[in-house]
View 1 (cartoon, protein in one colour):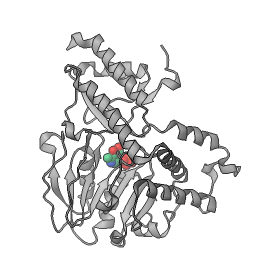
View 2 (cartoon, protein in one colour):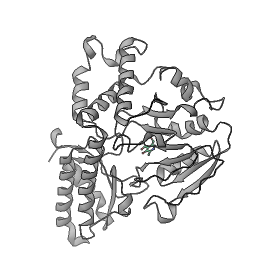
View 3 (tube, helix red, strand yellow):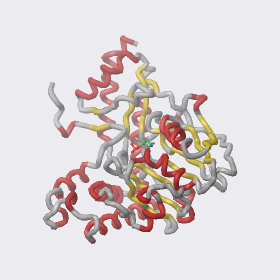
Amino acid sequence: MGLPCLSEVFNFAAGPGVMPAAVLAQAQQEFLNWNGSGLSMLETPFTGEAFKAVLRQARDDLRALLNIPDNYHILFMHGGASAQFSLVPLNLLGGVDRADYVETGYWSRKNMREASRYCNVNIAASSSVTNFDRMPEAWRLDPDAAYCHITSNETANGVQFYDIPASGDLPLVADMTSDFLSRPLDVQRYGLIYAGAQKNIGPAGLTIVIVRDDLLGRAHPATPAVFNYQTQVEADSMLNTPLTYAVYLTGLVFRWIAETGGVTVMARNSEQRSARLYHAIDNSDGFYHCSVQPAYRSRMNVCFTLTHDALTPLFLSAAAAEGLLNLKGHPMAGGVRASLYNAMPETGVAALVNFMQHFTEEHRHHV
Ligand SMILES: Cc1ncc(COP(=O)(O)O)c(C=O)c1O
């Protein structure tokens, strides 16, 4: 048996997730001598014009990909999306003692726990009573809240917002870590958007923040300068050493998305990939089961279980032996999770569906 040869491997990890093969190849080719400089990007100082140009190009490309209006700033920050769980209240409360949160699964819950260290967390809507099998529809916003926070895609539960209710006068803040750049976005509906890079856009640690101009200047005085949106806007995201290599790689991914047709094509592809997999689950005569309501099923993280749960470890190891890697569900949810980020080729989903059908034929007698 042995390890499958590299060309047959598909990475379904929830994060860090699959990267575009063309981007990895370009990075490899440029690794020792970036842009004819004789230096690796890893050795290139961030204070020099060469790196600054890379960062600015990445920012301009992102602005073009999402049509981000001029009154929004784009930041490249450290700390991952989890740092934003604290940085959002630290930067946006502005003396207000409360914020609205929409509770939709594992990540929004973690977020709320962190935010409650800084303010009163009002649960404006929740789907916990239905075990997060859908997004909540009725919102009870607190008019005195500083902002309303949502998680656009719950990575661990496999639920995604398709129709986001209006947040009234409150700035809408969204953790888009696991569906950023997977579809077009009306940025003007949001006060602030953030996303850890390690799913759809690049290396872990780097976090993109898109913040509306009028929300700057409200930070708590104890906010560290490197985590203060305003000071980072003023410093062009270079108040301290930025994640230079991650910014460079992310810039290559932005280019790859643009050259592949932009976010509209990303959305079409992800809709097709996920529909194919959900179809296989729903037509397995109960061998596989997805508990998320069809209208809210994530196109990024397809979560499902085997009705005969004792077969799950065998399913995962047999899949890995076929080169279908990292399919284990989130520890909180169990089961199987296939993450289908932008760089997942259609052939990866086809291989997974094919494997699932064969596995069913072999093991149906257990059910
Ligand atoms: C929706 C969501 N938010 C936040 C995070 C945390 O990201 P990080 O590990 O970059 O802090 C994750 C990671 O999986 C996530 O899926």
